[in-house]
Image (cartoon, rainbow, N blue to C red; front, side, top):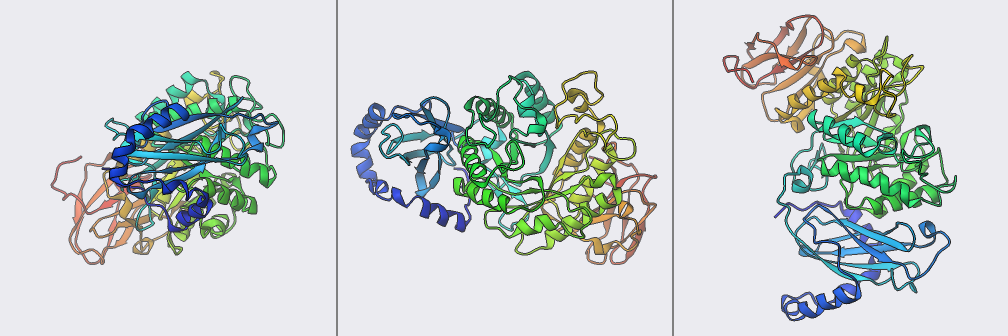
Length: 575
């Protein structure tokens, strides 16, 4: 049996209050003897009066039930509220909303966390709508036996020590994200599948996307608008059906998807009621998917983001929620991140170390010091760098080295995840059009999306991923105090992290002739190895250092290097 997802107590209490109206339904006899005697009758009633589900799902796969409204509404997207409660084995309870999907069709969806019999019941704001109100049914969920990591391990959650993210079964989730903001909106199905195949081969487990930002176009690739009005009160199901298909395809390919910008699905910014309504609708539509939600999309701190964050939490207790803030560029700490940090709805701290108008000093400072500041805040929450300087193949910045170095700086300064981006626009990059994240479809452009897939920086993210995967990366604890010879320039400062409970450490040198490390806290002689983050391989030269003491260690050549201390002895074979 799979390990259950843990739900924070405050979310459970909130859900209990919201769904108190279902108490009478749960008074149904659930004793084994009663179930045995009444099973045949119960299933017969369900089959005849409610309609059978499309299929019996496996645990963690998306399931849905179609409901047919018996009444007409001027604007069913906004005029009617459909709620659903699921109750299952071991006293499990899930609660969310249903959504309108065009015409007289409404749907409810779920990804059931464990196998067994689950029951669902609806409540509609229009109690006279017999097609939506008081509907009931059962779902027989079977164990998943396939190879998809998501369905085998379950929705993401926060680790018990609140330092990193895990799958539902407790397996650490190594966040290496890719930025594809407009891809679900602007790509066709073949392009999307080719994109997924490439990113899977490069071992990106997560993709960040946006809903329907107006800067990406008025319509999707098929000419369909996301809303029928400027105020975002009249959603267009056809657009969101196409959107959700891309999310489902990504899940089926093994990707978690982070949806960023719930408070601004098209423009900045709709009124709170419209933003909260969209949040409820999109969460209901994606309730059975492996998704993470962020109300903010590169904005300053805003009360609207908190309002939509609370509305999102009202709609789900089983999906992670964070905020993707803007970059308070000249601040010593990530002020926008910290203003959201202690909100109860927020599961982990999203940081944007940012682009900083191409100022590499600021970018390096933010990728290290901002991560460290958020990491040290109590009570702890995982820290993820959701956006750093992209590789846009720029002339003076926005280069592969920027995306690469900020990733290493972040990971060794307390972040437990990093998201990469390929492409940028003028004036940041003179001839830039947006690469992958803006989904440039002109093959003559140097940053045509399929060309940008092959930029070396993406492969260098794979090198970082594989390097971390070979370690107990979730135990990394930043220890900058062990470095004794830091330069003044932030862009040249090294970072170092220890692996808690182990005589191991990792340091990143952006461009340093040597690093002086105090190894007095280690208990055994340490093997010294050098890893090349540009080419993804270890240097052949090895040695060891005695403890305690301060040792000056010189990399094999100029340029970026990653130092590893501890682990296999110098006489062991190379990996």
